[in-house]
Length: 156
Image 1 (cartoon, rainbow, N blue to C red):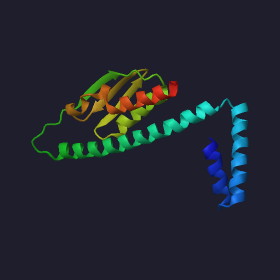
Image 2: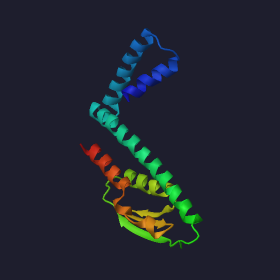
Image 3: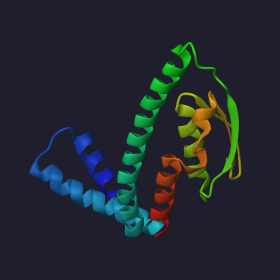
Image 4: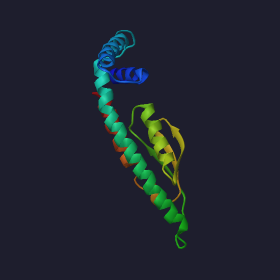
């Protein structure tokens, strides 16, 4: 939040001078102190947020690369004249504790071409896969590993 307050100060001023930077640091610190005192925020939460930014960026990069790979596989599957498509429904459970991370996993699966999250009930997912080969390793995917690391990083 401290960096966000400072960045907003710079953006709202529209230019950078020594005075604007000094006042920006002061005002950002005052606002940060206010939210720490009255809005259940702390320096510890701030540091955790900065650490998790890199995890979030790496997750987005992973998601984009998986979307590209899945696009290629779906195109190859559809255009292949000799391959018989065999759709499959897959059920699996995850050990993710936070609902937010479970929803992120469900959205990531749906955003990846060839797979759709049909239901998410508690810890159990029902996934429709365009082909049986796409269903392999769903419960132990890289998405799950990254989200577990994200969850462990927040517990510390």
